Length: 339
Image (tube, rainbow, N blue to C red; front, side, top):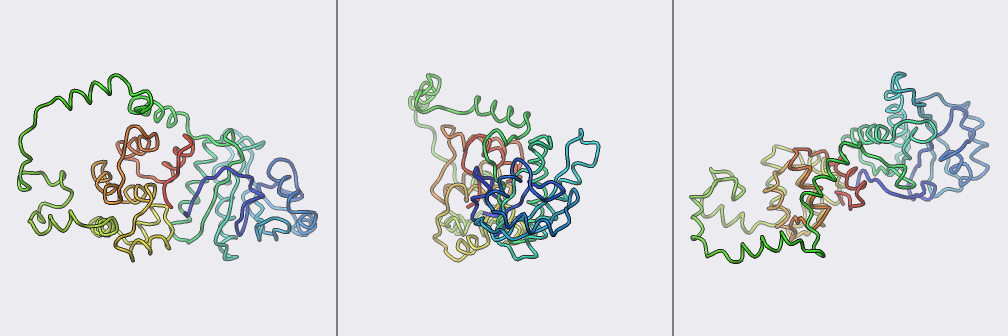
């Protein structure tokens, strides 16, 4: 997956490069900086002494020494002064310059901490948004796997309004299968007791949106073909209908190019549910269209699944930014979209 949020110790990440939230001397300090210097060993300090420090918003690179990573990219984040001292621009530069160094060294993977969100006081939700925005923009034109590494849940925070809105939506829509609410049981009983309805109308009487293809294609041959199409066939058809390129689609879906190639090359490919939903998000499908695509992969959305309810919240609100969706999923301890 091109961008992942993970809970881990950054010094243990098996990647080509890790990013150190350093101070301007580059000679070690507290927090992430101190942990990285300790894990990398004394040779890191020796090399850092030769670099002449680093200014805020810039980055420099060293060997990884005793770390699993081949390189350490040291960047100096801004201290928070209320947002009136170019903090956002400087923090954006930290991510941008670090990614530039990683690309110059042909790194296939890089892990970031949430820069400046510790003792430098940058608000965690704002720091996260900067990280997501810059990294996602970079990944539109570059092939790399990027991790945002969170040491513990206290270090991660989405905006309070978004969190509360999603929590309220979950409260309103989530059905706990174990408690089997009385209202839900009564609803099902009412449905089961209803008399048989009239026969379904012929295809010619259905609206285009109900069957998922353009009115101009409403003939028996096209209906049968689309009923039988696989997930990969539907995906490729939707990409063409949206006027997207393959690369635009899999990048917006936060999907690795290699996985997309497998899907394109195998008409019977069965994706995971998060992968199928990721493509629906990339294509900006309606909730009905998303459910149709999931059926092709053997899945469905359910109000008994918090993951599904969160996905429904974003689609119903017209928010198809997969990185923001993954922020929310991580905040609610759910699986992320993509691979």
